[in-house]
Image (cartoon, rainbow over all chains, first blue to last red; front, side, top):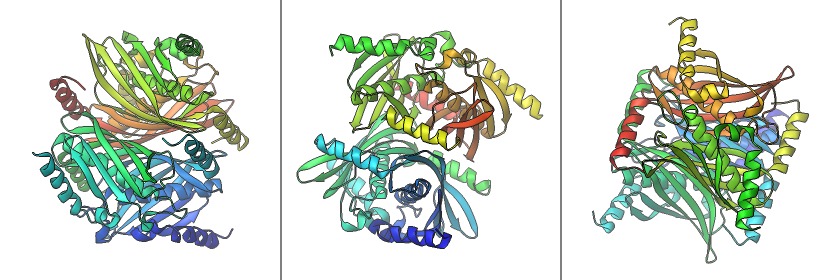
Amino acid sequence: MEPAAFLAMGREVLSRQPFSRLVGAELVGLEPGSCELAVVLSAELKQQDGFAHGGVVSYLADNALTYAGGTALGVPVVTSEYKINYVRPAIGDRLVARARAAHVSRSQAVCQCEVYAIGAGTEKLCAIAQGTIVQIGDSKRAAASSAEEGGQ
Amino acid sequence: MEPAAFLAMGREVLSRQPFSRLVGAELVGLEPGSCELAVVLSAELKQQDGFAHGGVVSYLADNALTYAGGTALGVPVVTSEYKINYVRPAIGDRLVARARAAHVSRSQAVCQCEVYAIGAGTEKLCAIAQGTIVQIGDSKRAAASSAEEGGQ
Amino acid sequence: MEPAAFLAMGREVLSRQPFSRLVGAELVGLEPGSCELAVVLSAELKQQDGFAHGGVVSYLADNALTYAGGTALGVPVVTSEYKINYVRPAIGDRLVARARAAHVSRSQAVCQCEVYAIGAGTEKLCAIAQGTIVQIGDSKRAAASSAEEGGQ
Amino acid sequence: MEPAAFLAMGREVLSRQPFSRLVGAELVGLEPGSCELAVVLSAELKQQDGFAHGGVVSYLADNALTYAGGTALGVPVVTSEYKINYVRPAIGDRLVARARAAHVSRSQAVCQCEVYAIGAGTEKLCAIAQGTIVQIGDSKRAAASSAEEGGQ
């Protein structure tokens, strides 16, 4: 697929996520195994101290990891798990998450992501994440299995 | 502090977080070292498949961990890091995160959290998280130190 | 299977792990979905300050998580990933890890574990872990897939 | 400090860790903020399938993260927490962990690490880790605080 068409496809997926529209996420770049996802840091994305809320930083990391893993695997995926370290208050005009697949096997990708705050012409690292993205069939089977068992 | 006053204080903090208002978070319970935080699963909190977006589940876990750690420590705190496993698609009318401090020392608390989806009279486990909540002074020193170094 | 036979089976598996013999691990308890694994804190398991080496604490947590997940699933498994918080220096005569499955689906279990240091009649929490245990078939397919791709 | 003296200092620290001697760890490289730590994959470091035991892979990642963070901070440190994804069975003659500090503030460093299995002239990625290394004073204060409280 042409790079522009690939990015357009990714943006179309994002536009169908109501929560991504709510936070105003923009897919800046997308290639097989890597992703750049951004938000304008509007007032409603902040916490009581004027920084971006951790939930916004986590949303960006989580979604960028999923895009990186999904495009690496080339199949529908979900995030199975991830870990994030917040290393600095996220202050600025804009946040951008950059994720890439670090290891890809048949049914899962382990991905890494950094989140940067951009403002006043500088870019500062705010968070570092690592997670596992899995093929959705596996997840659905797992979910179905859980459902059969009556929950939990 | 009276239990009711303690909960009211927590709610007042939550009401000053614009992002928590955006997602409609409600602090259901708060005691020193434990917290219950919920959202009504409105359409705008979902992703393209009709489940709660992972970012919403993460927001709840992150914020509930912070409340549990902050009330255990009794000082201003931030979440330093956490890890989350999504174990089931979050489908239902409402999500609730329940967090507690598992270990508390002078300047940090290690906390655990479960997120449940509630609907049709049942409650199903959707995510499990574990993280470190630290006294904000330590974090501010760290941030200041980073700032002095000119970023990253 | 009888509880005693179940524990004996687990001990037989442990006895075939050279590294578990090297550290002197003892399987104290084993039931479907839970495990208790211990080591005597001999001098060779320590680091330069006389505490248990972090690697020993991690070994215990990792292996206890695997037993809890494997017995919950009832199939051969591997640890896919885990996270550990060290909350206190591990000082004492003996370390014990207690793990349990927190959520079980068809092909994976998310498990939690605490590691305690025991000495002078007391038991103190030293570490808290959370991880994902997966059916080995999935892992082998993933590994085979990686191998086909020529590594990394 | 001269690079050779820096490495010699690191090796001297390693030689005082009984558990590192037990597993036969060798510090291959050390610079401020980065570390390369290896083991020969002898029979006693394996599990029942002939792969390196996960505990050995974790030991390497944990210790390499600590060296990377400690040399970045330039003060005595401990690993506060880390997360590891095992991405492939560790098969080979030798394992090597390469760690680096990804973000350094006054009292903590967030570090990343990859563990590779080396054999038959190839090097294959086996595990990816991310963790927080903290200044030991903070940890000791935390531990002291825990001790005062009588544990847990």
